[in-house]
Image (cartoon, rainbow, N blue to C red; front, side, top):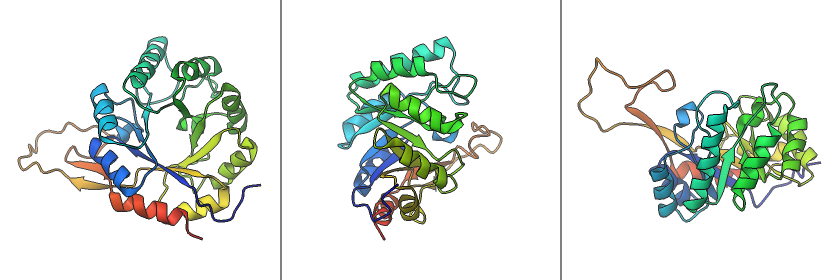
Length: 255
């Protein structure tokens, strides 16, 4: 059963898509960052330039998203080759971890490809991302990932938010028996982080700790937009906030 007493060593991973957000996460006390491109679509692999600059500017570990496109996690052979090459690039750029997920059409973990990616990533830390939340059976999938040797699983308990999925998160933590780390993500905030930790027994959480801000652009062509349905406007962006990171960390250790 999870230990429901106060935990003193909660790990906060902050997902970022910019250098500015990375610096804010570090200043706020985050333990590591997950670097993505295009968070509006759930995150894809960031550019080599972004990876290099974030790694240069931050002292905390940088884990990089390996996802060749948005959408589902059933990848064609050419997309899979891109994932393998991206892992090699991340290793060359000096990052500490990679984050990926790959499924079969029936909703099970693609164990063959996942093993290949995990082996290729060695000695980096490996996280299976929220593709886990799209699997047909989370408990079978968890055992599969344990057998494949991954270090962490990022999940909301197969619900839109970690709070809604807290019962499944608790069951997954109990199932792991410390064989793999369960990291709760989606909708983590200062308002719920302590309760999620207390009710599930997890020791790692994942959050953006972000807020929106308006672009400094003065001239705006009202007849044009570059945005798609994933984002309401190119003049509004999200960025991690130092104080939000601090408050989540403080709240995570409260009774």
